[in-house]
Amino acid sequence: MYGGYYMGGFLDSSWIIYVLPAMLLASFAQMKVSSSYQKYSRISSGTGYTGAQIARIILDRNGLHDVRIEHTPGQLTDHYDPRTRVLRLSNSIYSGNSIASMSVAAHEAGHALQHADGYFPLVLRNNIAPIVGIGSRLVWVFIMLGFLISPFFIEIGIMLFLGVVIFQIVTLPVEINASRRALLQLENGISPASNIAPAKDMLKAAALTYIASTLVAIGQLLRLLSITSSRRE
Image 1: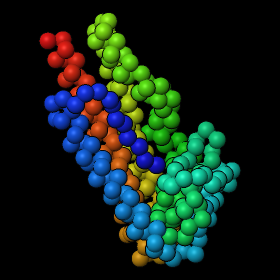
Image 2: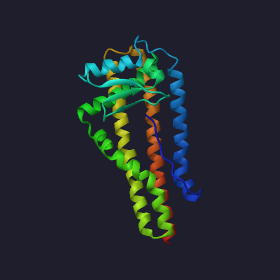
Image 3: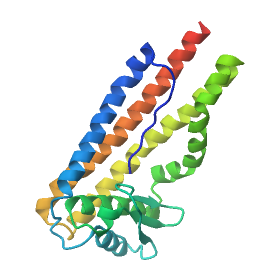
Image 4: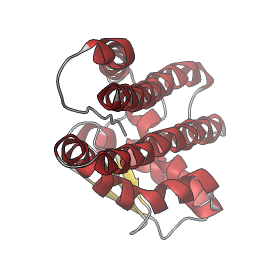
């Protein structure tokens, strides 16, 4: 549900200008989501359902009876796998009956609804994810080769990292839309009205982490462009 990118390298003025502000926001976002999770994991959802049961209700009422719900180890490791059509919930979300459990489970079910609807940003993200995953691991290899051998490799590195930035940008509407779908489902006879606002607060905190990750990626791209421009000069 959460993620970010950090590019290695020396700490120079370009890192301070382009990357540091975004990384400070990312740190704040992680603190915000952690504090929200800790707060709302102690408050009952008032539904009488566990996170797994809430996800099942949402899936079934939308005709997604074939989407399985599985338990996955860890904390906040929740995700929907479109390849296998499996929704995986972490320990406390799967069996918990807190506002946090309800919110996260509904959010992940929202991704399954997107998949069933053919929601374009999700389809695009799923298609480019394998390529971006490989490219993000090779960016600095090509940048270093560019410094040592030929500037041509620097251009390749920048293009690879541009893919990372595009992936992060595409992820934003996917996550925001999943949260909107989750809240609509919760409002439709699952959650007491008094717990919708706390659920929204929990999901907003999660969305902030994606915004921060996108800004970090953009900052890193600007840093790469600045470094390579200075190198050419």
